[in-house]
Length: 107
Image (cartoon, rainbow, N blue to C red):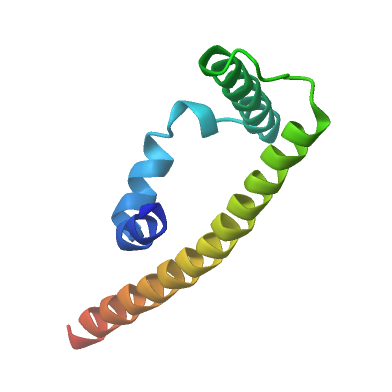
């Protein structure tokens, strides 16, 4: 899974602006919309799993716990990535601000 590296490589002011201007469907709007998208994705995952493996009991607590553990790891990783990306964007903004100040004071 190279998605972590890809996220860090795409972290730029340009990509942040593009994201803010054209949010992807599952994450646009309010917190409630995002929470609903997460819940729907879990249901879709379980439906797909039971379709692929008809013997799987979708009401099995152990299955639910395994999915939650997996999702929790991803959540922690993406939270850390968010902090790293935020710090990188902060640095980029400060660097751009400094360049702009130098241009203005040079005039």
